[in-house]
Length: 197
Image (cartoon, rainbow, N blue to C red; front, side, top):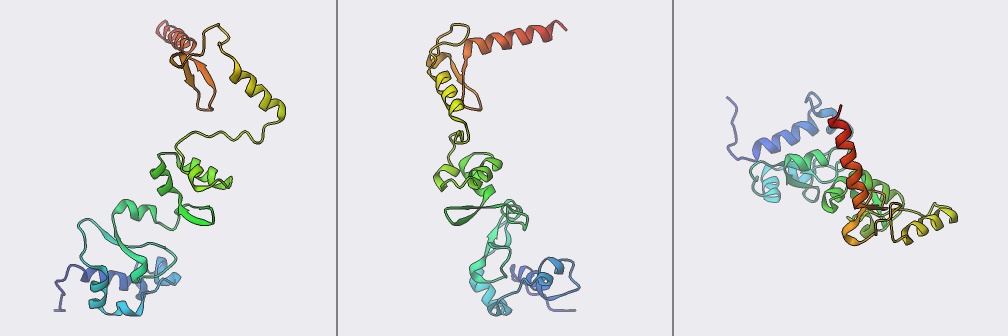
């Protein structure tokens, strides 16, 4: 019967080596088969333990950069959520010349992933990309469109004569003012129509 190392990291180390060094492994094509290697230092189990320390509960071995191999500077202990985010299909964005994982920025900022991607694609700076404020890009509007927008913003009352006070003003997702009283009236009318069906 083969010797079984009782150290908790031994199976982690063995699995890493199997993925990268054994062509018959199920995971070979995603690791060794595409050039993911293990640094020479980690040929030694003792060196692997020294570099990685204890295995935290619920964590697995994770490479920070999926294009690089298993080595001390590129490996960490990560939970399943982090591992899912770090898959090869993960979306990255370039901001101010630096590469970021889009999902991490979206979670940090509390905004949608698509918003992060769109802002980064427009070439905005880091602070603008992760800003929780809703920003509207009106740079593409014609002069007439900008003037029309300014005219609407200058109005003090809605079309039904209600004043745009702070208490009576809602903002639409596009950033336009909406009369709260008119909005409530429309909702009430809609509810009556639905109830009478």
